[in-house]
Length: 568
Image (cartoon, rainbow, N blue to C red; front, side, top):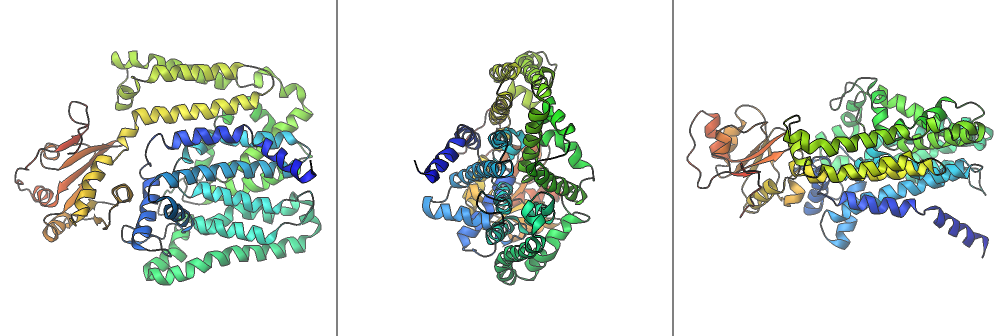
C-alpha cells in the first residue's frame, strides 16, 4: 500500500467509533422534538423571510433588516432548500454536520500539536462529544457551532505539518473570513490570541517573527475584506438605521454597558462547572490540571494561549451568554487532554489511582436514578409539586434504570476510563434530552397557535404581538406578512381601529376569566401562556367594555381536563 493511501486509511480508522456514535446520538436527539423557541425558531424565521422575499444580501426579520447576525448560516440553509425544498430537516442536519466537522478538526489539531503523544488525538474528540452543555446547545439551529468549526479550521492553519512549518496564511484568512461572515467581528476574538502569542507555542513563529506577524496581518486583512465585501453593499442596501446598527451599535453595545445579556465580571467562573461537565466532576482531570509543570508541550502552551485570554476577555465584556465561548470548548478539551497525558507520563501512580477515578460521577448518576425511581411516590404523596414533576412521574422509572446502568459503568476500573466517562456523558445527555421531550417539550411546542396564525395570515388578516416579537411563528406557520409589535397603553386600541378583523397575541403569566372566555385560543408556553385574541375583543376589554360573546368557545391547550384539543 502506498504511504499516502496508508495515511488516509489510518486517518479514517482514527474516526472510529466516536464519529458514527456521536452522529447517531446527535441525529436522534435533534429530531426528537421540533425547533426550539426562541433560538432555533428565530434563525429559521430569518432564513424563511430572506427566502420568501428574495432578500439574499440583507437578512430580514419580521419585515425589517436584521443586523444581529451575518448571513453565512442563512445562505447555507438556502443552499439546502434549493435542493431539498423548504423544511426544518436540512437546517437540523446542517447543525449535525457542523458538530461532526468540529470533532474531526479537533482530532487533526490534536495530532499536529501533540505528535509525540497520540493518546491526546484519540482522547480529545471523545472528551468534546461528552460535554453536556455543548451537545445540548449544538441541537439549536444557531450560529455558534458553525463559528466553532471555522475557528478550529483557522487555528489548524497556524499549526505545522510534517512537511511544512510556516502557516497557510491565505487559508487562515479564508477560514477567518467565513467565521466573520457567520457571526461578525467577534469571530476574530476566537483566533487572535493564538496568533498574537504564537512565539510562545510555535517554533516557526519564534524563529520568523517578522513573517509571522506580517503575513498574519495580511491574513486578517483578507478575512475582514471578505466581511466588508458583504457588509458594505448590505449596509447601503438595508438603509441608514440598519447601517448604523450593523457597523457600530451592534458590536459595541455588547462590549460596554451591554443592552442585552449584561452579567457580572465573575459570571463565567461560576458557570465553568456546568460548561465543563462531566469532566468538572472527575478528580483525575482536576489533579492533571493542578499538577501541570514545565516543560509543557507545544499543544498545552497553545491551549493556554487560546483559552485563558479569551476567557478573560469574555469575562470583561459586559454582555455574556453561556454559548458565547463555545469555540473555546475545543481548546479547553485540548488543555485537559494534554494535562492528563502529562500526568500519565510523569506520575503514572496518580494516573491509575482509584480515588481519582470517576466514582463521584457514578454516585451522582446512581443518586439521580434513585430520585427518578421514587419520583412517582413523591408526586402521588404530595411531597413534590409542579407540572414537570407530574409529567416526569409517568416516565421517570425507565430513566432511573438508564442512570443506574451509566453509574455502574463509571464504577468500573482499569483501562479505558476516559472513554467510559465520555460514553456515559453522551448517553446521559441524550437521556436528559429525551426526558425533556417527553415532559417539558409540550410547553415549548407552539403548533396550535402557529396553525391558527398561519390560517389568519393566509386570509390577509393583520396580526399583532404585545411586546417584542421573536419570530417564533413565522417559519413554522410560513407567514408571508410581518407581525406588528404593540408597545404602550394605546397601541391595542389603535391596532383594533386600523384592523378590526385582525388578531392580537398576548403572553400573560396566568389566564383570568376574560382570557378563558373571549380569545380564540390560549396555549401553554413555558411558564406562562400564549393567547390569541380578536383585536376588537381585546381592545374592548382594555377600554373597560364588555366584548360581544364569541361565536365559539376559547380553545385551550391543554384543555381543563388535561388533554390538548385539536383545531378543526
